[in-house]
Image (tube, rainbow over all chains, first blue to last red; front, side, top):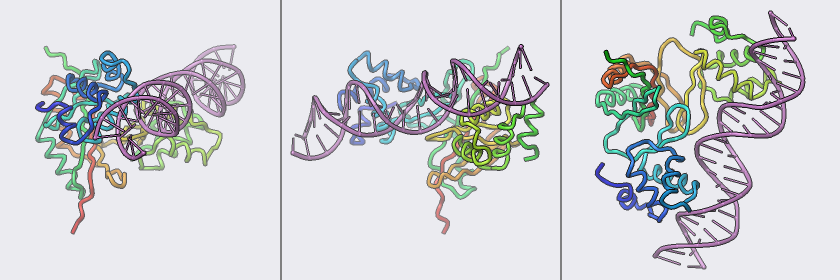
Amino acid sequence: MSETIEQKCEAKGVKLTDQRKVIARVMSGHNEHLDVDDLYSRVSKIDSKISIATVYRTVKLFEESGIVTKHEFKGGKARYEKLMKDDHDHLIDIKSGEIIEFVDDEIEELQKKIAAKYGYELVDHKLELYGKKKNHK
Amino acid sequence: MSETIEQKCEAKGVKLTDQRKVIARVMSGHNEHLDVDDLYSRVSKIDSKISIATVYRTVKLFEESGIVTKHEFKGGKARYEKLMKDDHDHLIDIKSGEIIEFVDDEIEELQKKIAAKYGYELVDHKLELYGKKKNHK
DNA sequence: GTAGATGCAAAGTATTTGCGACAAG
DNA sequence: CTTGTCGCAAATACTTTGCATCTAC
C-alpha cells in the first residue's frame, strides 16, 4: 500500500531495467490478481517490444525477491499480486470468479497452533475459500 | 477408510472397466497423494497396456464423480487422493515434501463464519500449511 | 448395432530455456 | 571486456483431444 514495486526493487537490490519498470508499474497500478497473459497484454500496450518471456522472467524474479506473491487458484494459470503488508487470504466466488481478500487474525493464530502441534514452524500457508453468493432476502 | 474406490464407483453408478479397476485398486492401496505419473507407473506394472491418457481420463472421472480429490500443491503436478469422510487439510514439510493430514474443527467453523461474513456460502476450501520441522531439543 | 471406453499420437496450455544480440558499468 | 538482460523461437511439462478401434450390452 505504501511502497511501489519499483521502490521495493531498489530496497532489495533488484536491478530495474526499462522492461522491468513497465511491468512493475502495471502491477503496482492494479489491485487485481493478474495472470501473465493479462500482464503481457497490458505491458504490450505500453511497450510492444517486451516479450512474454521477459514477463515470465520478471514475475519470477519479483516473486523470488519477495516483492510479489504468486497464487495458483483452482483450474488455471498462476496469478500474481503485489505483496501487501497484511497477510490476507482469498475468498473466491465460484460463479463469477470474483476474488475477495480478507484478513482474519484468529485463523492465522489457529494455523500457527496447528503447525506447532505437529512440531512444525509455520513458514507459509495458503487458504482459499470457494463460495456461492447467498441470496439475501 | 471404510469403502474402497471400487465400491464407491458402484454406489455412484460409475462403470468399472478393467483399466479403471486397476487404477482404482492402486489408488485404494495407497494413502499417499499420488500424481498421474506415479499412478501411471504403478498401473503399468500391473497392466502395461493401459495408456496414460486413460489414467488422466479416469482420475478426472473419479474426481467429477466425487470419488477422489484433486490437490494442486505448490509447484507442480496435480495429486490425487482417495476421498475420506473427514474433511482434512494438509501440512507440507517444505524440506522433505512430506505431507501430514490433519483435521481441525475449529478452523472449519471459522472458515464458514468468514464466508458468511461476506455473504457467501462456503462450497469448498483449500488450506495448506507449509512448515519447517522444529529442532526439538 | 450403439454407446461408451481405450490407445495412440497429435494438439493444447502454461512456462522455461538456449542462444545470439544488446546494454551498462 | 564482463556480466546480466532481452527477444525470439524452440523446448519442456502437464494435460486434453481427435480418431479409429475395441468392448459390452
